[in-house]
Image (cartoon, rainbow, N blue to C red; front, side, top):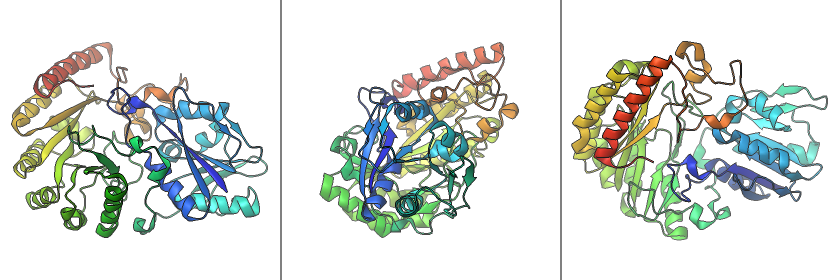
Length: 439
């Protein structure tokens, strides 16, 4: 079969810069890899604000990757304006579809929606479609329409036991400039690529739309195999691990470090502040790690508790100092404007950043957005959130849930929001004066 996989490409999903792309679309890259491995042909197509109408008549199946809610409308436009073969199988998957499978099935007028990991699902769908038509009875992890139009939910599908069994993502289907970048590794000009060494995050942060709560690690040998491929095929000098939270299981992280240390690559990863220690940081530094990005979020502990971050100022301080002591650059992400933010909470964030400034290489400041799929979004009354699709007055505009260039008021009275706005201006001024302009 010939399969097209569509993904959204919007430059400002990353920190906005002229023609600066986000990291590659790993969802469709892994799907394409398993499709090719099974003997089918896979093609990856980017949907952009200026490229939404595609001729897809040459494909037996088309899959839409709903990688974020912010790009939902863009992908829906592509579904409505593109041209398909009369008997084409239309599939939908991705983060947004996992959170809202029935809505995605209906909106996209699709035959089937994948709910969860899709590598095994898509092969089941292609096989069943080729041999038995559109009857997907019994396939785990899907929602589909039967011949009468009724929506049927398949049985649950267990997570893959060993993600090392997956082929390497099909980067060869993308232009080289979408794979190798020179402005994305810790503020350096290192020629680098992005990789995923784990899936999932077990921590329950209320603001985070994590795809799954169980973490799956690749083995050290698998990680090395991918990096050697990237060195040989693309000549990379470094890489960034884009996992939701790479440093959870210290033993597995240490094993990967031991396996790749002799490759001479520079790299970065994301972590919580409460999952690192000095010995692990030293091992990471010896393996080439030059930056760790931490989710600090706030310097106010009651706000951190409300976020279900459940970390403390001392843990943030210790992690940043230990990282700097190990010779690794520390970067922190700060979220301003979570329900309850005010002048006092912002002052505590500024004071912690001020204290850590000698040890912090970079700071990225974001404004709070109740992302679909998060606990905050699912319980708007508890957090006094407005503007979700669960509430009256919904206008269908998913693009408002965008983590960049966001100035929307999500909660609070006029007085509360005025305080949020003024305190954000103070925080941003401090961050830019100390670490440079924010995008």
